[in-house]
Amino acid sequence: MYTDPTEAIRRELEQAWGQVWDSKQLKEDFEVTGFAAPYVVVIRKEDRIRGTLLFQHHPRFYFFWTPHTDTLST
Image (cartoon, rainbow, N blue to C red; front, side, top):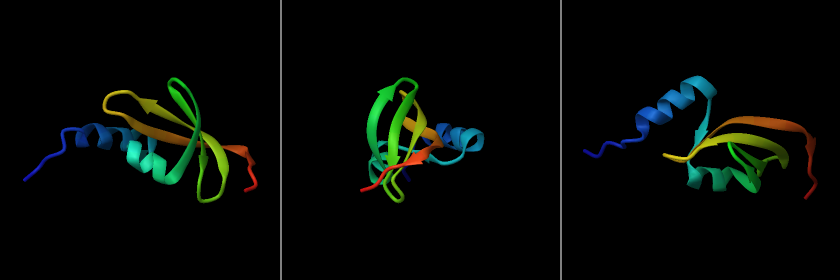
């Protein structure tokens, strides 16, 4: 049985910050428009809301989605 060595880290982040995305999941849910460590500026694809996520480098996880008040039209 395969055990993901990053699972414990992911669970800790989820407890502290809520939903956590890996790089693949981030690309599915968001368009990245910029990085300013430890933040990434994104647009959520489902509703075009601009916001930020925090990220950590290793393992690379994104978390603490914070929407901004502006929206973007398509």
